[in-house]
Image (cartoon, rainbow, N blue to C red):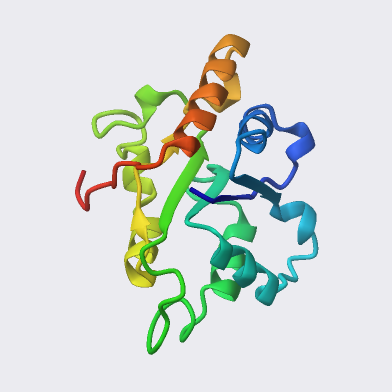
Length: 182
């Protein structure tokens, strides 16, 4: 399966987790990793190039660190610019229909914070629901996100395990979809 990883990290050189995940993914066959902050540091997105990239993929991955329970600003800019009416949704907007959409996210806090009775009150999946709603709108199949919690304090051996698991996850022919209320 041809997989496109759209990596959104504002300072990848300073990243530990996202950089390592991208490195692990980038050596897998049929996986292409693109650093969007490097390509569009000025936030001027080449919409036609992005569309060409998306059309070549069967699985689209948006990889980013979780900032303020959401994504870095370029993700939103990219969505607004690229997922146009008439192309990604709306009348004749079916270019991404039936492709897989996967979110790979790295929240900084430990997993125990992302439970309904924990300090944040929401699971990571809860916080990613706007991406699932977008997936529903554009007709992609929203697969279970790949989540690495505790990114701010992850140990080296755990990071290596997560990087290997990520590369393996991206290589699977079939991934499980995330249910609407799961």
